[in-house]
Amino acid sequence: MNVLIAGGSGFLGSALTRRLLQHGHKVSLLSRRPSAPGGMPPVYHWDPERGEFDGNSLTGTDAVVNLAGENISGGRWTRERKRRLVESRVEATRFLVRRMGERTPPPRALVSASAVGIFGNRGEEVLTEESPPGAGFLAELCRAWEEAASSALDAGVRVAVTRFGVVLDAAGGVLEKLLPIFKLGIGGPLGSGKQWMSWVALPDVLQVIETALSREDVSGPINVVSPAPVRNRDFARALGRVLRRPAFLPAPAPALRLVFGAMADEALLSSACAAPKKLTSLGYRFAFEDLERAFRNAIRAS
Image (cartoon, rainbow, N blue to C red):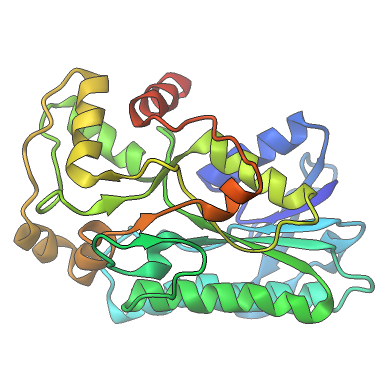
């Protein structure tokens, strides 16, 4: 396939690019900083805020992967940061979908990122793709993000929305931030540690995206999470065991709220026990269902 990736410069996009190229696909990227002619993979210019888009990026494109979006955990959720988070996800996705719809014919498929944050804080509830969205800024952001991607259906594009759990990779995301702390032996649970964490190993994320690109029967929201979610305290203990370090120092909820503001309650202390119901129905076999094994693989591969 000829695949165009928006947001391909991040740790997830970079890993996906390598995988697709290794499997014989052609890959090109969208970036605010295009490459010189002849660069590999080719990087085309876009700037959604300025309405700038190199239409050559869609020439011959079979499918688009949308991973664009500012880092959710990049700072406190001030009014300005919330605006940027919405702009970089919802508005950028709308812009991309409009440009796809202007092509005749448009790309056949769009695989667009989302997150299990769409469910909000749901306690002990088991959450499938049929579960309704939750409350809060993060849930509303994800809901609007998914709606923007789904508007590509109007142009006859097959749309799959990948709701990622905590992606485990030592080169990026949550694990990259946790490793230095846990290696010092000062890691531990967040708040009570009772909240559910839905996690997924990076190799499974890449395989699910490739599956969504290639299979015509894959569409709609997909919970991209391991079938073995864990409580936050067990997540911390498992990482401590793998690193052979103690992992019992809790980060009290009031301290987290003081440092991170509203993001603490919605991204660090909330509970989401998501289940990969759709992937199970498709017969998908996870490479990593055991958390400690996933940790070891992520750390060894870094």
